[in-house]
Amino acid sequence: MRIKYLIVGAGMSGLAFANFIDSDDYLILERDSEIGGWCKTVKKEGFVWDYSGHFFHFKHPDIEAYLRKRMPDDEVSTVEKSSKIRYKDALIDFPFQKNIHQLAKDDFIECLYDLFFRDEVAASFDASSFKGMLYEKFGRGISEKFLVPYNEKLYACDLEELDRGAMGRFFPFADIEEIVRNMRRPDNASYNATFTYPKNGAIMYVNALASEVDESKIWLDQALVNVDLNRKIATLSDGRTIGFDHLISSAPFDRLLPICGVEPEPGVFSYNKVLCFNLGFDKKGIEGVHWIYFPEKKYSFYRVGFYDNILAGASGGKGDDAAGSRMSLYVELGYEKDAEVDVEAAKAQVLADLEAAGVIDGHILVADHHVVLDPAYVHITEDSQAAFDELSSMLSLCGVETIGRYGGWTYCSIEDNIVEARALAAKFNTLEALDSKD
Image (cartoon, rainbow, N blue to C red; front, side, top):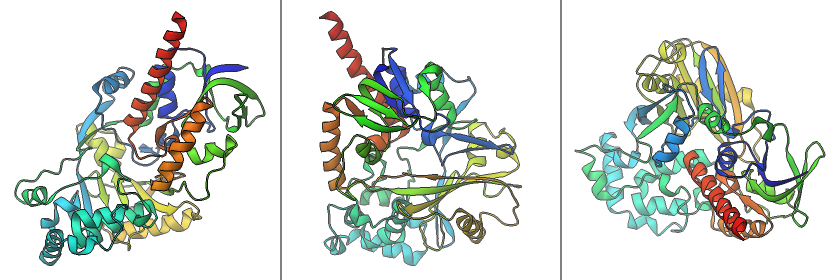
């Protein structure tokens, strides 16, 4: 069997490529028993949960329209974000650096003073690192009260290991003028100031893409175990072999390499993993907030999201039972990539921490679900970028293209994955059109 386009991964990237490639000569391999990758949705006891929080911030109206056209008319609504930071038992607005005036007086003065005299400490850190960038831009107070501890919990690593631009456009920068102006004229807009969310979960966007793909061309429970780059032959977990002209992979890059017979330098591709709990409680709790960031080490989690508030916002306050009378949470904990995750111990600690934080108070847990995202956030470093550029170029010469957050070893949005997959498909479509003219 030979296929022109062998697509590895039935997540957003792989399905998007299948949508936009003009050829019908493709096949999608998915190692899981369901499509969607980390965009799966779980429904349990009336609660609607995703594999962690997935909220969509479309910058390309044509892509949003493409997806919406393939979904029920009333499925998606736009929500104006309300996000908070819990700091010293108080909730302040996100982003922290633009809302230091909401802190207690002593903390505010410390942050403002350190902001103006940030050059005094910036020289102590490597300016090319993510940590060095934080001290350079915001000084010691803002960095040490929120930016450093929060991101250390998120990435589960020393921030000096990450590149200065590890978060790209997703980091909420603010200069001194913006910070001071925000004290009188609040403007906390960011790249995700508004977001869209389907009432039946993120899987609805996945299903929109899947609706344009022939089901017979998606092979579930089929992992890629070997690729012969010279002969362009892929071996599957069931022992079958498939020849290909082009292999389009959204699989984690560090795991694709040995499958292709390429061994990278040890440790060059690092990442964290995230344990996400979805928790359903018998009654409502905090109202109106969509998610809260927890930088302090006394809490095991770094972020808690409120699906009941999100779904209420996305349905005009007329959501289902989970969005109406009960509280529905996602709770995220970061781990080093090699750490062992004790789910039951973590769950007990999460429930204790939620109570200590005032998120639950006499609530009864009526439903729960968990998933370990492995990988979750890749660690972008100078070495990883150089290695990726070199090795992905080598694979491309052999007919293998790597895309998506993990295939491209980058920090990006779900829309970015669709944009990238569409661009790659357009390149192949153009080449096919030119070949047909010859």
